[in-house]
Every structure is written in structure tokens, then in C-alpha cells.
Length: 108
Length: 180
Picture 1 (cartoon, rainbow over the protein chains, first blue to last red):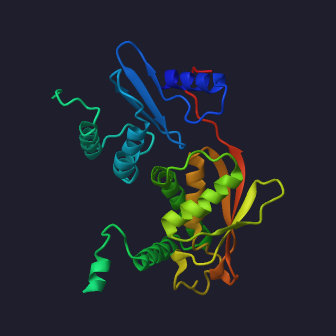
Picture 2: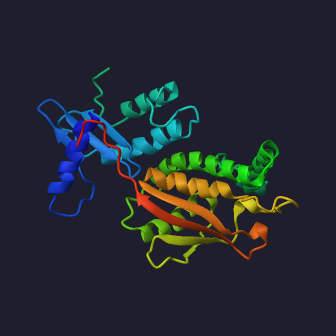
Picture 3: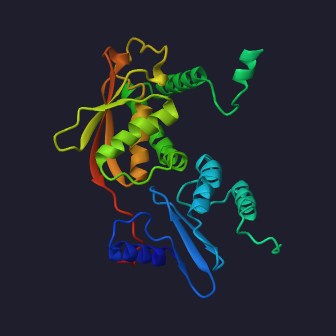
């Protein structure tokens, strides 16, 4: 997935006629929408959502600073660059996503 | 009564004095463990580096600044936003090299060195070396390789503390093997 996103990102950067504000942020297929938020430090947050969801850049940014920074960056046991094993992070992430307005209420 | 109310305001904030004392105890222990000023300074720098690579995420998340367009903007952001956010001080950016790839940060009130004096026999110690490491680590995570060092140090008798930062090169995003 990294390779695909990297290629799409560099493609978008190259064909854009104007100076990029955010760069590549999402793509849609017939079944889902893949949203990307990239921090200046190169960290990429990818969320697959339903097709009718709007721009969730703000949501992903909030995810970054309320969940990732608090429970991964500030946790000395979590090594950067490796898969995140922290259960606390998983719990907080789950809570965060469930509270999103775009999370359907009917799904269990 | 009212003083207690002010103190209990933000449980997450640690008192500045506790911070200074903790840092001092850390340096003292490092000196004892490594016995040489240079080695202790090097370890402080290394620790700073490890702090920096994580601190940058906290910084980017809280300050929400975008990418800097040039090194001058980087310098301004470091001084006015970064230092302010974490140490509560704003160093002065100055002494730009003609090529624009080196600058100095002048720090007058370094919170790490409140009430600190370098003991006899340890005049080679870069007490605040951790700051150089933090700058190096943080900037490396935003694709800039820099080197940072102390030019002047108030603890060593100079009037002001001056940290010099030199831009070495831009780091490219690592592309996985097999991609172009």
C-alpha cells in the first residue's frame, strides 16, 4: 500500500498546475474511499471510509494529536517505525473512531 | 486559599523548578557514570536526539504549522513556536551566514540552567547539550540534516548562551526497494 500511495502522491505533485496546498488527500473506488493525511514529519494516516464521506483531513489531524501523539509518541515502550503493539493505543483508537460523526450508529 | 486554587489549576504542568532539578540530577548522574565531560556531553546529545525525534510529533500536532519553505522560516518557527511551546522562552535568531545555511540562537534565560554553576574541573561540560540533540533529532524527522553546537555558554563565563545550527543537507523520503 505504501508503494501505491507514494506513486499516486508523486504523480499528483507533478501534474498539479498550481502550488500544492495539501497534495493528494484521497481516492475513490466503486466500493470505498481511501483518505490520506500526511504530517510534515512523513507520518501517513490512512483511513478507508464509505464513499459519501467528505474531507476528513481535520478528523485525521485530530486523530494524530489526540491519539497517536498521546499514546504512541509519548510512550517510551513504543518504538517508532515498528508496528504499534500498545493495547492502550488500540483501545483509544477504537473509542476515537466510534465517536466520529461519520461512524454509522446502526453498525454494531 | 486562592494560591492553592491557582496551583491546582493544571495538573499536567510540572513546576519549572522540578524540571530544572530533574535535569540537574540527570547531568550529575551522567558525570558520575561516564567520568569524562566529553562523554557526558555526548550522551546528553544522544538523549536529546531521542527526545527530538518524538518531540517533533508533539510539536507538529499542537502547533499545526505546515512545511517551512526555506531555512529562515525554519529558524523562526524553531525560535518563536518551538522554544516557546516547550521551554517558555523565545531565543533570538541571528548571525546568519552569507550562504543562509547557518544561524545562531541566542538564549538569555535558559530554564535548564536556573541556579546552576559548573563545578571546578568540569569546565568542558556542555551542560545543555541535550538541546542540541533535540534540535538535531527533531529537524531530521522533517527531512533536514543539521548539526547543532554551543558557541557560547553562560555557564562557562560568556555573557550569553549561543547555539549554532548548520544545515547540512536535505534528506529524501526513503523509497522502498523496487520502486523507482
